[in-house]
Amino acid sequence: KCLSALLDKTSLYRPSPITVAQLIEFGKKRDEPTSYGFLHKELPIRISHMVKELHMLPDSLLQQHSVKLVKDMYLKTFEDLVAFDEDGMHDEQVLGKFTRRLQEIKRRHQTVVETMAEGILALRKDSRFDPSINYFLDRFYTSRIAIRVLISNHLVLFGTEEECPGHYGIIDPSLDVQDIVDDAASSAKHLCNYHYGDSPAVKINTFHQNGCHGDEVSVVYIASHLHHMVFELIKNALRASIENPHNGEIHPVHVLIIQGKRDISIKVSDRGNGIPMRLQDQLFDYHYSTAPEPDKDSRIPPLAGFGYGLPLSRLYARYLNGNIRLVSCEGYGTDAVIYLQNFSEDASEVLPLFNKTSQAKYQIGTMVQDWNVAGSLRPIWS
Ligand code: W6P
Image (cartoon, rainbow, N blue to C red; front, side, top):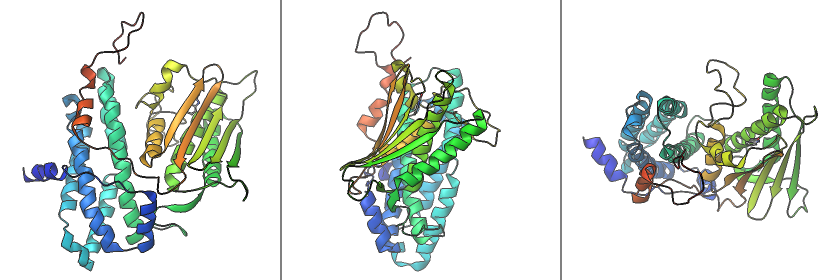
């Protein structure tokens, strides 16, 4: 119908990625009409790309109840947003209405990750896992992160969400990395204590390439995103360490925070015996988890679990042009590194584009292997 034609038309525009530096400029100006002007155009574009990509999923998934729910949610939000036009920018009442609408939209989409995961899990139980699902989820969740950042920032600046002192919108211009690591380590240790009755020590060090003002490392970033990533990596390191003691001794987990010229690196090292090479890439697959499936009804979060922690953390890092890499040596331990951009001008949103190339990736399941190796009669993707 009419809405789907508008969706097609909107998806012909490219999303406009912004940088953390630009987010700060927005935050300093605090100009509601400007923010309205950007968001009322940009959000429908990002949503249209996401919905078009949703339609690339195999039918078996598209017909899942939870996937349908998610799709309808996005369509409703698209409809809500395109009701606002350019003229609204100059009308105080429309600005207020837009902000309240965004609040409603943010609430509506609160449970999208879990709902989508349910659909995928249901499919996974009864059929071979299609690698394009990983490709899709990376892009879908990245898009969701990006949309929520724009909405949250607008709500902090012009809505009822609280702004932390010294922040510009949701951006902390001098986020103390050690503070975040201290906090994440303490939460992860609590969780580890709860599940294992004990937890390894976490030793934190900082290093500044130009350490003339001490070794304090600060970054221009979104505190909640950094906390999510660090907490996830420390949690994994604690679990590996406590499950693999050496001669009855539990090795500590070491965190090294480094401020270089271009990069901020946060390295989490454990001596928890490592993971064999052939399993290393799978750590970033959705629903791959080394732990048994946790109890869904428990009110205490599991220490390891549904297999979303690592892939989602890497999405947070990549979203602002950073990364997470894992180097593991089986029989010894694992180094996991979070890389962030040191310059806020380089911390640009990295957004999925829906085009011919991305569409082709959904045909990848039908491809055959192009490297040969003795004894590999297994199909390429298993
Ligand atoms: C492990 C597995 C893992 C994943 C992520 C971070 C650290 C570790 N250690 O053994």
